[in-house]
Image (cartoon, rainbow, N blue to C red; front, side, top):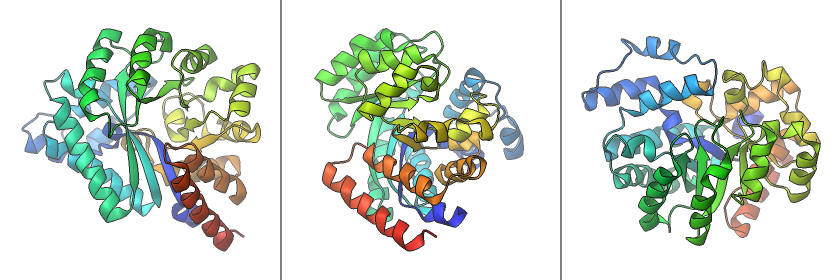
Length: 336
C-alpha cells in the first residue's frame, strides 16, 4: 500500500512554501546570509519542532523564515520542495506564500515572488509538475496590512491564481478581511481561506458567505455543524485537509481519531495535503500513508482522495480530466 500511495498521481493544494524549510537548508541559508540562528545544530533545530498549538508553531515558523533574504534563497527553498514532490508523483501543486513574513523584514515582494516563480517554472519544465501560486494574508495582522500586500501582488496577477488567508485563526475571523477579498475578486483572483482548524464552524460559514471561497483550507471542524456538512457535500466545496499537521497541533489527539474518513464517507470533497511538511514530519505521501494505516483506508478510498485533489484544483477542465485519466490508468493497473 505504501508503494501504491507513493506512485499514485496526485495534486497538493495546501502547502506553505515557507513551511518546507528543512533544518539542513535553514543552516545553509543562515550561513550564506550571515544570520545567527537560535540553534547550535541541525538536531537541536529538529528537537525544537515540537508544538503545543498553532501559535507555538507559528513562532518558530516565522523565526525560520528570517534566513530567507535573497531571490536565490526563495528559489532554493521552492526547488527543494519540488524535488521531494517529484519523488512522490505530485503532478500539480498549488503553493501558498506569505509575503508579509518577508516584506515586514524589508524584503521586497518582487524578491520573494521571483525566486518562487522561477523555481516553479523550472519544476514544470524539468520535473513535469504544473503549478499555481496563491498569495496569503496573515490574519493576525490588520486588514490595512493585507490591502498593502494585495496591491503589491497586482502587477503579478496574471501568474497568481488566488488569494488566501492563514496564520492565527482564533480571534481573527474571515469577516475581518471581507473588504479585501471583495477587492481581490474584482481584480480577478479566486479566493480560499483557512477555516475550521482552530476556529469554530462559524468561521467556515463566514469564509463561504463573506469571502466567497472556492475551497476551505482544513475545515475539519465542519463535522460539528450538520447543516454545514450537508451544504459542503451538496456544493462539493473542497476541504484541503492536512492530517499530520492536525495531529502535531493537537487538533486531534491521535491520527486514529482524525475525522478524514468520516468526512469522506459523508460525501465531502476531501483532499490530503502536507501543510508545512518540514515542521510536521511528513510530505504528501507520508500524510496519505498515515491516514491509510490509522483509518484502514482501502485502495478505492485512496484513489478517491487523489481524484478529489485534481477535481478541487484550479486547473482548466481539460487538464484536470487528463490527469484523472492518468490516475484511472494507474489505479486499474496497480489496484489489488
